Image 1 (cartoon, helix red, strand yellow):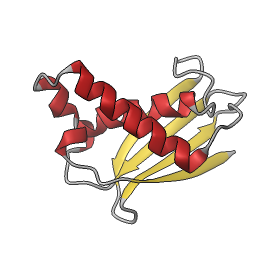
Image 2 (spheres, one colour):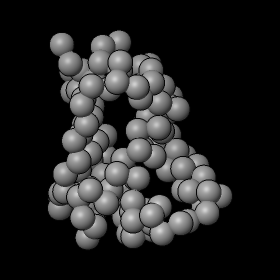
Image 3 (cartoon, one colour):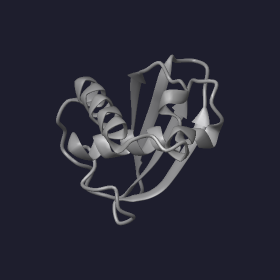
Image 4 (cartoon, one colour):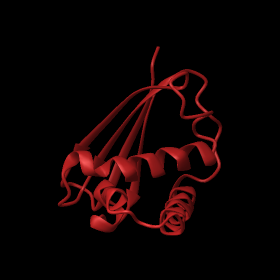
Amino acid sequence: MKEVIKIPLEINSKLGTNKIYAGVHWTTRNKDKENIKLLVKSIIGIRKAYEKPVKIKMAFNSKLDVSNHSFLFKLIEDSLVKCGLLENDTDKFVKEITMTKQKEFKGVIIEVEEII
């Protein structure tokens, strides 16, 4: 089973991984984490976790380099755990991740697919 979730989000350098390397204070990172968690929860609600391991693909619409989305990917992945969609984000439950770019939707398109 594959599920597609669309998260409307204006992605800019403030959510980029390069921001972390610039030495952003932990309280700022924590605020970003809470904001993303609330946004994801508002879209998908509280869910039952997948029973089998999954692969996650996130496609981002922004001007950032693909790898510069790793911070945002992690924030969203943690939010999927908090919403109950994923049991955990360890390699026991998430076997594969992919980050790509897209232009069809202003935000992030998430695909979660069970691995059989």
